Length: 281
Length: 156
Ligand SMILES: Cc1cc2nc3c(=O)[nH]c(=O)nc-3n(C[C@H](O)[C@H](O)[C@H](O)COP(=O)(O)OP(=O)(O)OC[C@H]3O[C@@H](n4cnc5c(N)ncnc54)[C@H](O)[C@@H]3O)c2cc1C
Ligand code: FES
Ligand code: FES
Image (cartoon, rainbow over all chains, first blue to last red; front, side, top):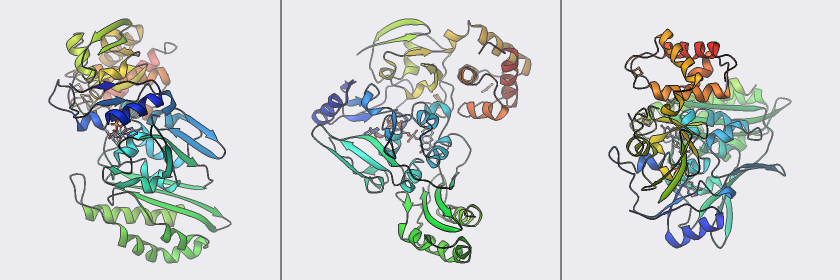
């Protein structure tokens, strides 16, 4: 039987993480499924397990100086109930799994799992979220886009824990989220889309677009967004085929048990077209 | 590892593999067989219990996670007035066929009504979205919840 730790403080958790190279355990909704065995058997872990649920410093949502700070152990339900959380993130979370899973699953787990279909990621990408990574001796902060490296792979070091997520609060008057799954509850995304924009007097002052499940990591293309920013919304209508073409070149989905590459590509471009035509107005 | 928690209003302590699933602990160590296992992966809700009043799938919870918390299973709920109301509503609406999903459904309904005593149909469907039923086609269960909310006015 592996060693199991249940620390009460962050300092203690980070020491265990460093000394034991233990596997962080948050809500366990990914780990219990991945590590599950036959009926009736406890899940299998080859390394010590570090339970994080008693670490107070990792919980709670704070709003300060124009930024929302979300403790990595905040559950998806807690985030959904908090009024300071940006809408785009709430829209996405409301469509994750089921109420019972959202009561367990944490945002930190969703991020560290780094699934191409992780539904909190596209909203966090468009909000320019940053992650704070702590180790026993130091702390660093980076853009979430740089933290997520590939399917199941992040920049997390062996002695680190994800401590919190920081989201700058910005104003958008268009907030649009779409998830395409097999059924409404408990199904993973075939495609997801997060789009926000700020329109002022017909001018697109800001626009940000991110797709989930269509590439190894969530997709965001600031260079295409730049070309749209500052333009009049009427002018953009005429340029839609051109914009779609640009995204078509970088959307590279795969075939898997949930969907086909062709379906994913067609649908994601359709949603983008809808967003540009019907929402930006 | 010694794990202490409150199970169906009673303090319990158990020396157990902390990674053992809460589902197996309540069924095997405490003989509470109303908590069912179907998928074992968080998708069906047959194993649903309340932890500190919140609905959770016990097949996804290592027992260490409930240390110091309160766990309520159908066995701890079935002697309440609220349960009686739900039971009657289920009978009236024909919401039970094989009954395998029923304990989990009832826990999900308690979780809903304790938050929202007069739900709309859409609230009910959302609240039960993680509970699968292979028999009834759901409409009867939704009817039963709306009926229970009506009959149990003031209780929740
Ligand atoms: C039935 C079902 C439906 C689901 N539906 C969806 C869905 O629609 N959309 C979706 O995106 N996901 C879905 N999921 C997946 C899962 O629920 C989420 O990814 C969840 O947010 C994971 O969080 P957790 O706390 O449970 O993670 P855990 O399982 O505890 O951890 C996941 C990974 O992250 C690591 N980790 C966790 N916290 C930290 C930390 N603070 N620091 C460092 N590493 C950490 C763990 O070591 C592990 O590798 C579903 C899962 C189930 C079982
Ligand atoms: S057995 Fe736990 S959700 Fe299906
Ligand atoms: S009554 Fe048979 S599964 Fe619901």
